[in-house]
Image (cartoon, rainbow, N blue to C red; front, side, top):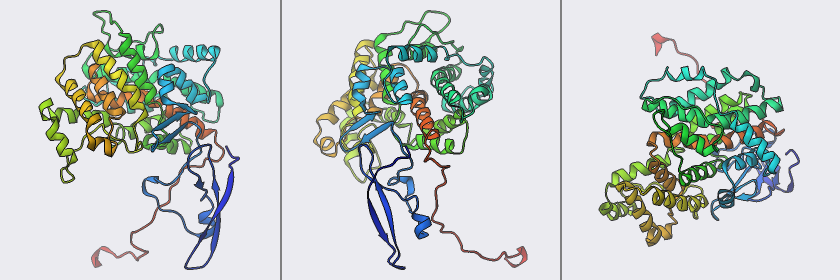
Length: 434
């Protein structure tokens, strides 16, 4: 990744001093060019100011490409709709980790390795007893994931390629187990051990919903929807949680600690809680008869009410993930024959949004959070588990991004600059004279 292509340069001139600085303009494989400002400070004594890093490229990456204006999401060059329709989650995980889709031998080996790493150390179960019964599942998941480094010492050396591979596979394999344990603990049911004869999504559903008193029957439509939710949330470029993982990893922290940091960042309501907000919004609307009045409130600039699950900060066109999940959503609701007023309300709201001219003009289409929230409710997951499921899926993206960062020779420890606006140097005043 160190062989960056510089097609031309841009010249910056300091109007005060008259000094000029030439900076290379670098091209990626697709997307906008970038100005390489790594030597800006050493050449000019100036640095950039970019709160939220909205105009700053923090790294080189070959994993995920997003074009929000065109509604494009690619993983290693493959469109997300093709991956969701023709692949499965573990194949996408292999792709993100290794750069190419697996052949049959590689696929079999990878699936076998993940399947046989799903169990966690038995002593980890004692960690859960230290949490209150009403602890949020994300609080539990964050704490237990960070503690994995205390159990798996043989995969914490980030400079060892084999250990990086083992840690990556362990995290992908064990995250569903830990997530299911967090869920079971929160509802007072016994933990379920994983089963090696089930697929990744089937196994997760089994660990969440099986009880010792009776055999749990896995519905293939529900399992397929779960697998698609995992695929569609696997990676999403340099978002807040992914940037957190990379920043933690840039210090040399072990992978388990880095993923725990990502979980903590994902927990924020502005990032991972959007599908939970959709359900809260539907509860606030309450009844299908209230939809029109709430839509009018959403259109009113002076009203603070917001319609969650419509439009997207990145996608100015249709969210490509939503197109895939809309089909799964209707299949799940149709197959399960759910008679839930809240879900009926959601479908009515979707129909209105797709035909209302205001939504069409503003491109406020239902997004992936709208459909995933509805599906997860139909599956009987409580809203407190929604972000946990997001974390299970995103672990693949986080660990792939972490691995890419470790292997990138241009990467340095993250150390953002600041624009200091505090007091200039001043002398200390003793207490009696203040």
